[in-house]
Length: 208
Image (cartoon, rainbow, N blue to C red; front, side, top):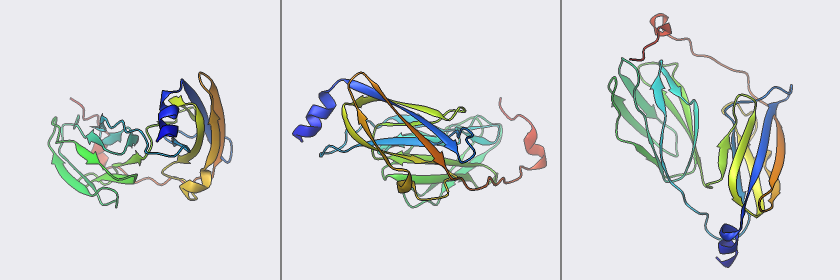
């Protein structure tokens, strides 16, 4: 525990991550997670997060949270949704009427939770539940910035919904120094994209 106390008390650094596919194209929506290698319990920073139901999609399509966080699913559409997950880390289902918000769901087990809608089959989203508070998702340029990292050694890995191999196969090591930025790059093998066709009437904008 003393090592962890020193880790948390140190001045923070940053990790700049870049994720591309095998052809060098930027990958958006990849989750980069840094886990301290110092012994001791990880700091917990659970928060109230949200994934919107907007234009008959989950927004964002990939949401990273720390274990113990709650996620609300506000319905910004003019139709009812029925949100559910059969994923092992968190099984749930709830009906969300148009323009309303159901009680938040607490994600208390690390892992990947695939979320769908029983009414609109093409709606698919992912909640990545991280054991560490140090994570970020890549933007459209394939870059992510993990901030507030105490100085020390970290194991860093990447997850994406279309990742072809095991998440652990992406693991790298990084040394974070106080008030400095480290950088890591990945080239991921991704599965081909697959699309569930939207209903013909679903192309209309449904937001109030």
